[in-house]
Length: 172
Image (cartoon, rainbow, N blue to C red):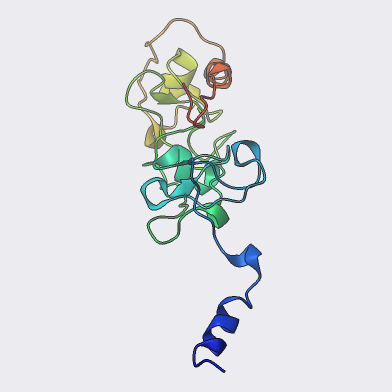
């Protein structure tokens, strides 16, 4: 018997399902773009998004936005939780009340205010402190006069929902 026979047997005794196959095309997981391939992301695009694409940054790596840890490359990065009042909103929600459950902060331009309903926007209902604007998660004003149109802090949610999802899983 060859001296390497036990080593060869040991290598082939693991079920193939436990071996991670690195994605050849930056798709990952089992759903959507992953198409039941079960690929793991490569090191340069380490996180597997909820849409089945490999990449970096919050839209790929936030566990609150569906990062698939099982198919992310754990040697270079992995899924992570949002940092309260620091992580920019990836879905138009903000804060910790109303619809906001992840502590996202509104972006520095555009929909900069966090309404009491938990949506980013720039209407009076989003921005006025008297309307319940969440100052820890966006900018607020005393009068809320940034935009005269007001729809109780929900208009921005529709704007976020109307955005198209690009092929790589990021939003336009």
